[in-house]
Length: 237
Image (cartoon, rainbow, N blue to C red; front, side, top):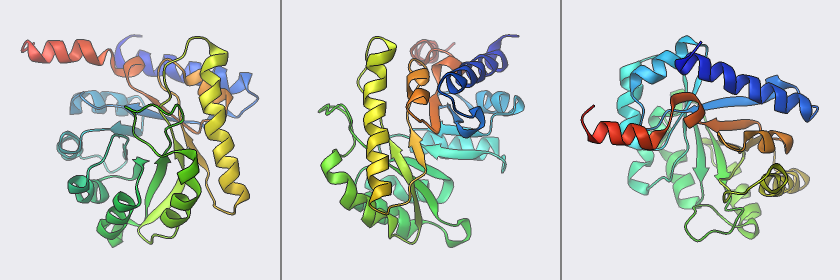
């Protein structure tokens, strides 16, 4: 079996093996299929294979795709950087936002969330590697922001997200994920209820699962190489 269906099967097998190796229940880990830059047809194909949760990073592309797919059974997750002028569209169309890193953005999402949709699930993005080019807050900023976000009526604070710097080898890849898991425990100890760790992608999902990931965000291993896709699009193919 090839294509998106075969790829999904292979990713699910990797996730299950990693969960069992870590002594975890595979059903406790969600697979977020990162469909950004891929068309509605790719989402529909993955949905036909039982995939329910999809991740998007570009607001207008995502809003158009959500309308094209028109499937109320899909759970849409926004995982990219979010600008103030795009918060309304995200608040109105998405079920989750994994990339909240400021109180200003959180307040806008809360204020603009339609009442009939219920609270928007959000994760706070932490810059675990301290990279100047990466979005996210520092560990020092986390407790205060978490308390503020948890109090907003239009949001439900679920947990933490990170995109660590690339690392070679399983043990090295585990380190930033262990840091994020420790931060989650710190919030729980402070009485802030968080149940989610959004961490791990195509290349490092095993390390993330070993450290407690509850969502892994996988694009290339399901839909193919995004760079190659961009080149095909640019060539009109």
